[in-house]
Image (cartoon, rainbow, N blue to C red):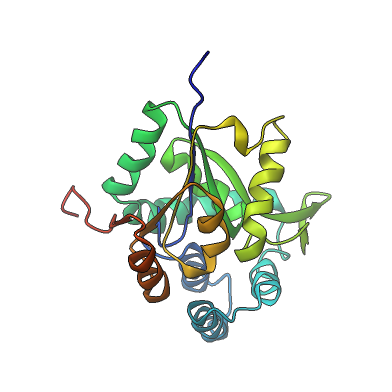
Amino acid sequence: MPTRPDLTLFDLDHTLLDGDSNQLWLAWLVEQGAAAPVRLAQQADFYARYQAGTLDIDAYLAFHLSLLIERDVAAWLPLRDAFVAARIVPRITDAARKAVAVHRERGDAIAVVTATHDFLAAGILALLGDPSLVATRCEVHEGRFTGRLVGAPCFADAKPGHVRDWLAGQGRDWDDFAAVRFYSDSANDLPLLEAVSHPVAVDADARLEAIARERGWPRVSWRLDVSGA
């Protein structure tokens, strides 16, 4: 009987990425004159709520999607790609790249699972060898962002269901895998960390660090870039 592969899932922000893609994107847009500086204070308030575990994810995503409605998708693509080159490339550490590569070489099925909307997240995945993406989906109509979502945000309690839906779309489920692993930094991801067979805390926030210690979950750091950068 053939050996079943593993399924390995990665969070994006503060896990594979040393930083928050939404924060970095907004700051870059302000620098480019494509967003008003007042939005930085609004972002800071949202992020404080995220860290406290009280974020209204619908309001947060509406805030970020509102940035996109002024231009066609085609007009945003070069701006996104320039942002990735300028702000994201330096924040994908060698340790994070190596972790993805190791699981790919083992033959694992790999996906990035993130609340970040798919337009932004998809621009980052090429830096990681184009793994599958399970993300919050932006609605697009006639080549423009509408500012609305398709379905529910891929966040907190909803993440396990998004992963199961993604697998079902390929005619698979969790039982097809010998192990299901998830790497994350955030206590907001507890629903998915608790659903998998092998949870791993990566540079964990204070709440997740305490839980990982108590439960004996592996804890790793990818912030120590082996390139010395």
